[in-house]
Image (cartoon, rainbow, N blue to C red; front, side, top):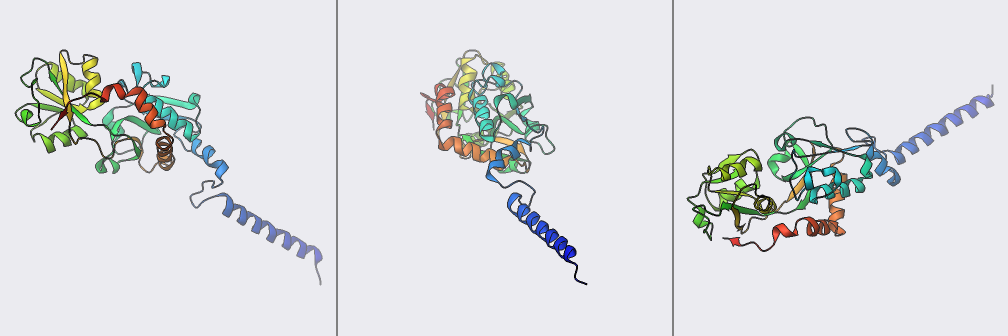
Length: 288
């Protein structure tokens, strides 16, 4: 017997299935993320450790000129200002950014993290990429040598003059690689720049090598008394630069990388560098 109502119900059900399938195909990607362009920003804000909040970690303490007065929440200092610029690109207002502190080593160690981004002058290396993700580089620093004004290497004018010096660097940094490549193999290592400065102050080492911005600040702030920047090491620019660290396979990595790239393209990075770093990077002797 002809069942008109049954046919109508079947047609409606079929149309509903087709509509749902079409909506799923257009509205979501294979990993379940909304692919509509208008939803990108809202998706990112919900993929953080605390949905709706961007948790950014930095060092304890955080040093100038990267963070002024150890207060990243102020947005003062190159990395603090950059962090807020990236947050804005991701769709987070300043009130939705939360700062926490971590050590340098724990940030790049394998394992779960309680933050979304970590920014404290991390050089991008293949070794570190095995444990964490990086954004594009946001600053390419060089390495400089700091000595005591009354030390036996205060008058050195070349890298060859430093071959007999006891040289200290922060462990696992670009400075170690540069010193090993350009000066000597026998290098003293320290856990952080503060320990490095104390070693030079105490006479445990003859010279220290660290990034140029930190070298100049270290002298200006008298972390080492009666010290001077001997010069910037020629050919020491970090080709990959400093990058923002993210947890391994973070859902935010692509978006943060794009944010840094966009800030570079629109001139914001250059403006921030000129504002916060220029006085630390000019008028230095080049050591060859």
